[in-house]
Amino acid sequence: MTFLLPSYSPSSRVQSAEGKQDKVVVELGRWYVHTTALDRFTDALAAVPFIEGEGTFLNRPRGGRTPDHRRVLHIRAGGRGRGRPVGAPLLSGQVQVRRSRGDDDFPGLHLAVTASIAINPTRFVTHQLSRPFVGRALSEWPPLLRPSLAARRVPYSTPSEFILDNSDNVLLTSAAQSFGRSEAWPLHLECYWAAIFARLSSVVEQAADDAGGVVGLYRADLNLREAETYWEFAADDPTTLVRDLERPLFEWARKPQARRFAYPVGLLTTALAHNSRQVSVQVRSGVRLRVYAKTTRRVRFEIIHDLQENSRPLGRHTSNDVRDLLRWLPVLQEDAGSALNHVLDHVECLSVFPPGGFTAAAMVRQISEACGADADAMLALLVGNGSLRVEAHDPIRPNVLALVAVGLLERTGAAYTVRAPYRRAFAELRGVRRAPRH
Image (cartoon, rainbow, N blue to C red; front, side):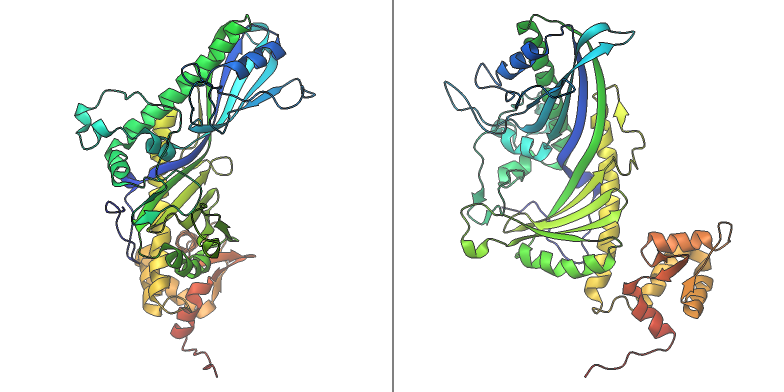
């Protein structure tokens, strides 16, 4: 059921505090192990149990030693267990082991262990559902719930809704939606991240002990590479809604766009094999928007920050304190909410007005909001010239850049020109009319 979700309409906007994290990609390390027995240590890593003595946490290294003497182990993706079934880990990625000569803090030859992992807080919360705590005030919860990093059986459907792809990163049931409500989300993030860090540290320490080595020093070299923040809306026909949003999103976008289809779960018929359309557009450098039908009753809007391409708004996204991840994610969440609302402003205009783009009145309002007291002068320049060339110290440059920021102008060679959705409006102001179609 999606009773906790707002219904989508052209006037829909999001609250940053309501956002949730989907995939988050981080690099974490390094653990220094006082031994040079690389093969012995990596074999020991691959033998460490995943949970309560069952299964293993990592798969054995693939192939032999690589030319630069590094061994890579992958976090296993499936369930495995001897005495009882063990669910798959609620994270993915790999652990890398290499020889290192050390430094002043840890001299001599040793092994350095780093982890590159993708975590999914929504998937974690979906698999943590603890009914005794649902509906209780946060003050009644333990300081840190005892989280599990093992997947369990979760529903892929309710009587009125089912998931359109293979993923389980959706709060599908009413109990899951209540358990994962926004005010409880920071606690879930803290539990999840603490469990991951503790488990990885335990795996390295146990493997070092089994290989006859010692973990002599740990450096919390944390590097956040990518983060996805999403908001969901209820919709009677999400796949049709995504199709209808495609045109205004593509007209607004300033970068090449991509479309693809996600494969649905097996319970769908072959005739519905391509009903989970996804539309992706670039918002700005390093920030993308992805819109898709997540279930038969909801549509998801995701903002993806690629911090390797553009580190704003965080600036520095590396740290020697693993707790900084919990500080960075809300900052990106706030930026993601602002970015999504900026796109939704344009989607509303382009959805309400005819396919040709903005009306003259709507465009004048955009210029007025962006340029303030200089709006009349900027409008006259644009209507009179059609494009603008400005130098670095030109007094109108700040207003030109403001119009670029709101999507009205774009850089074309050495000039700034009016973007396609606004050209009809400028033509109207110049008194030009298009010839009627026959």
